[in-house]
Length: 173
Length: 257
Image (cartoon, rainbow over all chains, first blue to last red; front, side, top):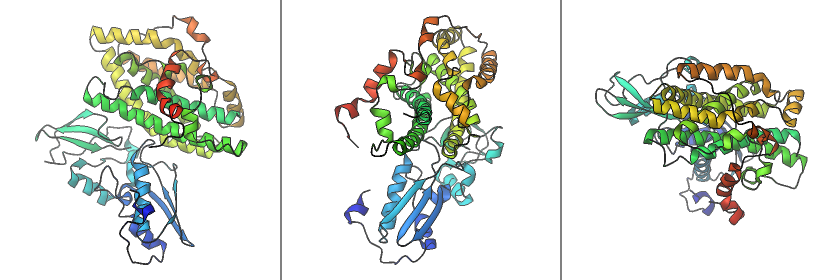
């Protein structure tokens, strides 16, 4: 975690020229709790500016108390330090509030492949029923909720009544 | 302390103290899934508290440069009479029915309050409320389902919900009583007078109670009503909570992970 401070990390020789290259590097930073998703897939990377060797980044939390946010900030610093970028300012912005609508289609597909059901509806329909489309393992639609809360704030717990497996649902939020 | 900071700290303290109470269930929940649920709600509330404390700290440092107050100072280094949370949220967990009812009352209130504050003239405060209200809505959904399940469950679970009301109903009035900072915030367009939420709060709570086959039990214990958490006059329970929550920072000042 602290590699970027001690300088013991593997250094990449590539010279960073512009903001697009930084965005490309950042788009590889993973969510520590759902490691198949990058912060770009999740839609929590809000803005990047690069000027006079200073990188300014805006990220937004998924949930107010999400403990992954601090790890993500450290990972961003570590990743950029590999390219010699050490002047990094990271700001958390709250508005507009993140919703699961910010998650990319690619991200949703990765979730399902990982065994987590992806958010099923656009959040403007949240007053209605929010449940996964199908079991991410056997794709049966014969499923039921076990609990509104799962292993992290962003997930609920379901079970499949056909293959009998419990699974996480990345709930619409 | 200026009245804006007091108001923001009031919002933060409510979230922190209830978050801490809920976290006392971690590892002790009635079943694993509900242990996880109440712990997740604790996490959301503590996250909300951090956002409010950070906002208050910025204002306090603007007013008194050089103090360098942080969110941790506000959470860990204030004494009981400086806390401005409702008496309701510091009440001990009791049984599951009491914990559920406390969460249901508070989330019902928080939802209505955040809905008003979304429209307020302070951009940072509105942003925190915009973020938090989604979480609060979910807490309310979860706790409403439990109120219905327990109220309309067995005679045992029903009577426990009645007992929970006997314990907690004396603290409902405080939710709607204004403190000095409420008047000032309402005047300046930052906050509201809480009494405007009262009718809607009772309408919603009674709606769920009706589904849960629960009567509303009017508060009996008038003595409790001399307490005013918003003004720092707390029940004896807050001191014990702070003793545990603040222990590490008091015993080892400045200690970090």
